[in-house]
Amino acid sequence: MVEIKFRNEADGKEFEMTHPRAARVLTDIRAWAEKNAFEHVAFWRDPEDEHKFWVQLGDDRLNYWIHDTTFTEGKHETVEMQMDYARGAQRRSAAGYGKFDK
Image 1 (cartoon, rainbow, N blue to C red):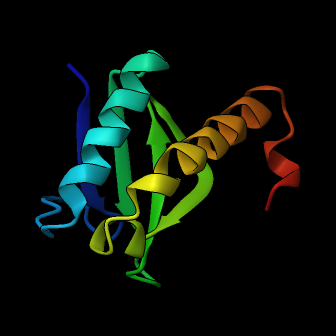
Image 2 (image 1 turned 60 degrees about the horizontal axis):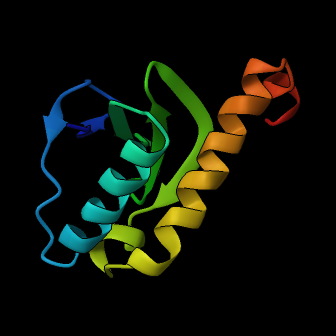
């Protein structure tokens, strides 16, 4: 079972994404993670911009973020593409290109 967490970057505390439209998005993220063999997915709220959620796939925190409207507006039709971009950022970082992505 895939574990999806939301955390505050400032203090590391976990919080729940309770917006009613987020449920479908979270279902799609869970399906994407299962298909791509990720047991843990985390979204870290940026301390300087609360609308940005930085993505973590497994143990890898990425230089890729998703806007909170993906969850609050229930943009489930775009979330698979966004998660694919996040996985691409993970691969770039693993290949040593992460330092160029700033």
